[in-house]
Length: 365
View 1 (cartoon, rainbow, N blue to C red):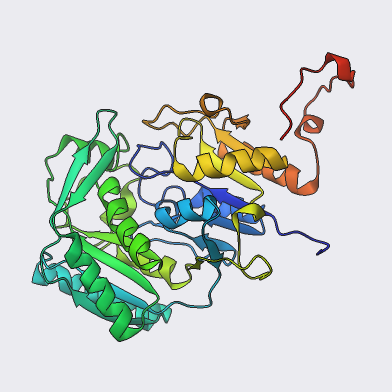
View 2 (view 1 turned 90 degrees about the vertical axis):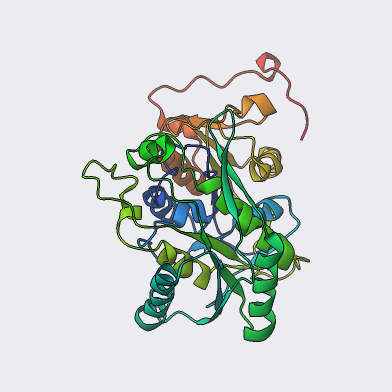
């Protein structure tokens, strides 16, 4: 057994649910950077790491698409770190010529300036037909009219170009007068695109078991001097592609039959802490992983300040969580755990050691 076990943190901020932090354009990146400093390994997902043309390289951060993250948390898939992935681009047939060239130039810039291995692109044989929807709670989601066209294009890249990660550029509906878009640009409400983006990437990952992320293709919006800083990253240019390419270049590969003896494969049982918005405990990854952490005496951290449109907290699911107000406190809780310090020792008062007879019995793990 190694003398030093690697501290592994999982940061989850679900997409399309109006998270106060992480519901906008890369505004959760400062959280990821901070938690990466108090962890040996940080596992998170594109919604946290993507900031349109802004991104931040972190050697110990692992960029894992949401469906893959769910399978990882359930113990079905392992994560194999990589040095560099060859990437392929799928471009929606509905993307206009000018907009397509803007995205191809962004890809060429990533090849020339960042040295990324982007092998080829393919245009889908039919328009993908993205539609945007909103639930009664305000969360966003969407549909694809031609999912088969997306899968055929991805299969071509995998079989003919040997790519190991897929970036998808789908044409999303333009609706610059939408109240939801106006609210989002001004730091309120829900990202109207996020739910549909998740549908696209989930389909690729479920089918091919390869890393995937999505960049929506949209016409540039009119200048608005009142844009919220949290949404401003999406105002910088014609494409949101650079962060996706940077993330996919080092996204871990999925190992379907994880070899428990292979020290290079990260498995769910190695996670020491999961950090979740206080009202967003209803996701598959959290519900799979949190009970395991409770049984092992590891950390489940609920962050109250990060409000969402969801209303599922840890107590609703019988999950024991450390409730903190901010991500600064979450970082402190992880640092204390890593140091082997009980959180109660960091408070100004400590209760006397109780008698066993005075403690309410708990179910044996």
